[in-house]
Image (cartoon, rainbow, N blue to C red; front, side, top):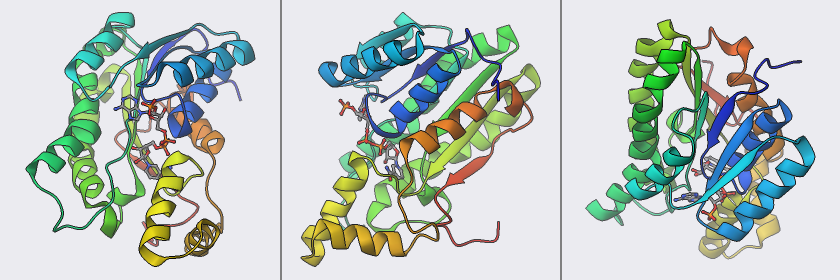
Length: 259
Ligand code: NAP
């Protein structure tokens, strides 16, 4: 399917690896020029080079922490008026409700709520002027069904979800669509870290931790970044112009709910 976005320009945050990279690859395959971001310059540059070689699109890189004001300014300096914005950052650490103090919540709120909100605040006006724009926020299945050990994520992402619900409906008349894409478990470094936590807590092997988690997913496997990226690119496509303010699960059926 031609996504109809060849020649558009996108910022994809936190995209040297994992789900962000999956989104970047799928957008590049659709002919979108990219600004990629991550903190580690070496892996970021390797990813950018691989995408340039595979898809022939323009790929610029900004090595910075997207959860800081300075980092966001650096990215926006390189591309102040993206047609497409994919918001992403690392997820908060697991723990228990009794572990966290204000500083822990502040870090989670900055990474997973305020950073995407500030990037939208800066880029939506130009999308509105152009009469076209797409924003996809990578959130989590924890928005639909809380994950007890990820209370920081449950909290911060709920705040972003509320913001998007209202804002998406305020900008839709200008041809600007904001949606959230909610990963369940995917085979990325984040999944390895989460499984590592189970290994430590339960005293089992990584293979056993993964097997147990897979058993809770109707698809009986972890998702891939490629599958995730393809759905993201569709949400950024011309065909998704009537999808507004939705929270789309990509979880192999993991969230057990009728709606
Ligand atoms: P990942 O494989 O660990 O990749 C994270 C990417 O983000 C890397 O490129 C990393 O590069 C970059 N990054 C992390 N923090 C950053 C920051 N502050 N500024 C700029 N770049 C940053 O993670 P993932 O699995 O793709 O997860 C992406 C998001 O989806 C996370 O918020 C995660 O919590 C959420 N999620 C993932 C899953 C899953 O199963 N994978 C499930 C639900 C939700 P550097 O380290 O070099 O910065």
